[in-house]
View 1 (cartoon, rainbow, N blue to C red):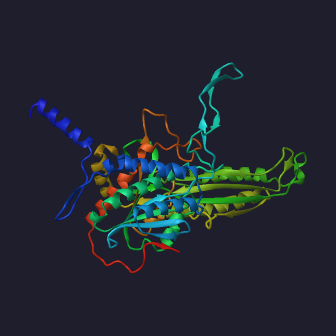
View 2 (view 1 turned 90 degrees about the vertical axis):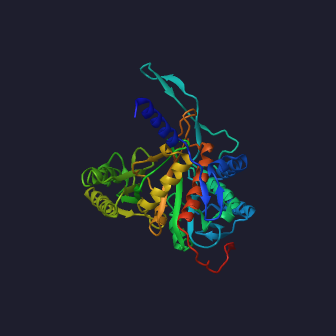
View 3 (view 1 turned 135 degrees about the horizontal axis):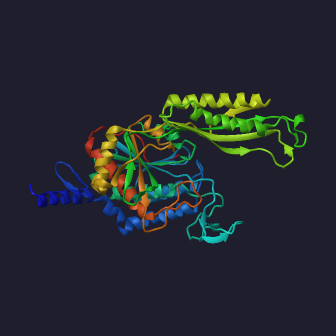
Amino acid sequence: MNLFNWLSLFIVFHVFAATPRIFSLTDSSTQLPVNFLDAAKKPEVFDYMVRIRRKIHENPELGYEEFETSKLIRAELDQLGIPYKHPVAITGIIGFIGTGRSPFVAIRADMDALPMQSFRRSPKVQHRNKLGIGVDKTKKEMVEWEHKSKVPGKMHGCGHDAHVAMLLGAAKILKHHEKEIQGTVVLVFQPAEEGGGGAKRIVEAGTLENVSAIFGLHVSRNFPLGEVGSRSGPMLAGNGYFEAIIRGKGGHAAIPQQSIDPILATSNVIISLQNLVSREADPLDSQVVTVGKFQGGSAFNIIPDSVTIGGTFRAFSKESFQQLRHRIEQVVIAQAAVQRCNATVNFLQEQNPFFPVTINDGDLHEHFRSVAGSLLGVNKVNNMQPLMGAEDFSFYQEVIPGYFFMIGMQNASHEKLEQVHSPYFKVNEDVLPYGAALHASLAVSYLLKHPQDIAPAEGKYHDEL
């Protein structure tokens, strides 16, 4: 083959790889040509998702308090004619689209917001420091936007408002094609992902017992708009929280010998906790211990009676996770005793259950790569490294095969987006059609690959108890 032919073949291959293919649903007798991304980008779907997302953004609600969000979702499902179960896990909703018979495949969105105030950065202004050197500074300013959070101290700083809008967008598309769905798509609107373990309560409610697989997503600034990222196997770490109270004896700062200083003891505790990773863990076994909370003292010249600290610990194996838990308690109590203090450690499992490691199913990984590659182009599907972040989606994966992925929303021509959980966090609403289309495509194509025919259990879907 001459050079010209080789170059032609090379160009054709790369054009094909970069071009999304039409996604179609087929059975033995009919063919439904459906490109869910085209459908999601139509004004009647895109504008619908934007409206939903902004309405939820205006009224952020914390975990297990998502009553207005839940009410909004149920109103939309009613309008679309989609049956559902409610309440599940206090504010959760489980919707159904399709035949009502197996196979069942689930797609999930989380609903809760964060206890933080949203801000915007002011334009940079140059100031002179003490050395006369110009320094660029920005100030925090309150957000001025028609659809900003109307609730002081609460915001959707992790994109869950967008996740709900995407799932409702997918529901709208799927309902339009319900007669062609060969099985049942289960819509999971989940409360309390931010530490409350809402997924655990959804599982315990038994509403997913017949589900064969579940898919979930998260918006990300780390990938460009129109691209996705994920991996097979461990993707996100297991996560736990702890709070410790170190008690000493308060007194005047000028006569410390008559006191037992819990601030000094706590300082030693924090330093010693860092050794758990740097000196006790295998460097090839990723682990994290972070103290993010330190509360103690109220005046410059008073030694307090006690200090409270809190933090998180993370690992990628159950063994490493349990070892960290054991050693955190040991170190806190022993180091406090060295300084003549007493200490108690609470792992807060009632309010914040330990999150397992998020482990993506290998077969679902291949399914995801195939579907996302067809929809977006194979070069838009990225293999990502594991992250130390955590997701309660892992509770689903402990009982059924599950797959979690990141969906990019960074636009190079726009401002650089902030990370999640930042007071400056923003969602690029152009991501909404991609999320809705991937939800719909992953679910419907999964059902086509796993045909069954089992009679549905008796009972009502629309169950408002």
